[in-house]
Length: 192
Image (cartoon, rainbow, N blue to C red):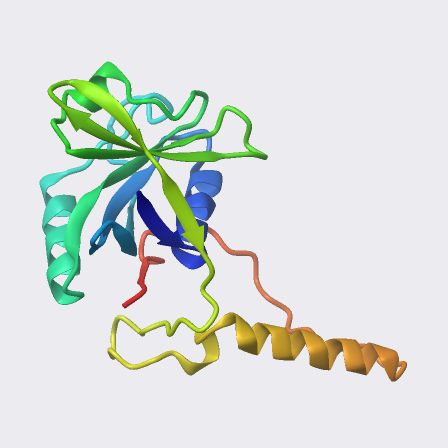
């Protein structure tokens, strides 16, 4: 069984949705089947990106540095099947990976993340459990220090409670105006 936090799962799902209908993917790192780091990678396929996800040697070098820097073990590569089921294709199996992580987007409103263990060209399903981030500390990858504004769901819950109190008092909460976001390959994070 693999365990992934809501935050890491959200990074994968946002990337899958933002890049649709193109395939996309990245690297997963962690310990003892706990996914603690997600490194999204833009699709480098020079051809039809809706049918194939491709990596370069530079992407592999970047992933290696990412895993070493955060003291994570390589768990595998994830990628999307924008119009298909999250089952390994013959092309996926040709890469000789121990684990394959696939997001099926046949129904974009209900994406499916599956993990597969491959042994002697046979495929076995692995369970994935999504766990809460509550109480988790997010570490800034540049400074190595906790990002206090993103430490846990508790801050979000406190802000929500404050906004509700403001509305009960007959006032409107102050919401910051955010610019629309586009998916960016530098939006990876670790949970360490």
